[in-house]
Length: 188
Image (tube, rainbow, N blue to C red):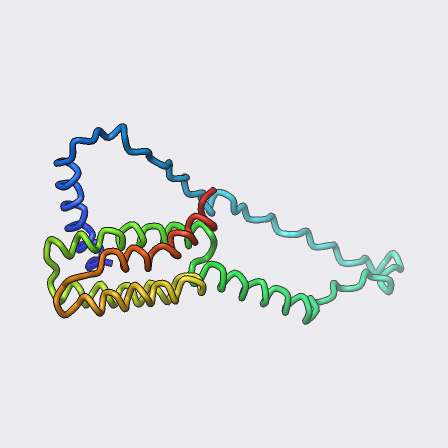
């Protein structure tokens, strides 16, 4: 993450420098509000322990008619929970839920969008290698439908490595499906 932030910071400096030279006023650029992340901790309230029924009193003669014990969950219920867990893992990757996946993907995409500008300011080989490793780690955590897109971004970085020249158009196009995923799954 450090290499990504370092390269992105260089790109951000370049972007600020370039925009300060333009004659357009900030009001001419539309902005989109970013939704606030919901707190999963606030929605989780532990349940009170269930009351345990009192043992039957042998003196009243009803000891033989005790209520049956609850039945254990069936294998089909376990399988259903397992398939729902797999569906969630496919949908949100290694992130616990939608909010976590959206936050992580959005943060990384925002940084990745600045990488081409970082190349303009100069990138050291060690930073580029670290960036590639971090991107590889990130692509293992994301939802399954994003891995191919992030692999394409990695390939573009590998192609840029020898001469430190990234194809800005191809890089932006490679990130478009990830941005579309964000709009589709995290837009509300």
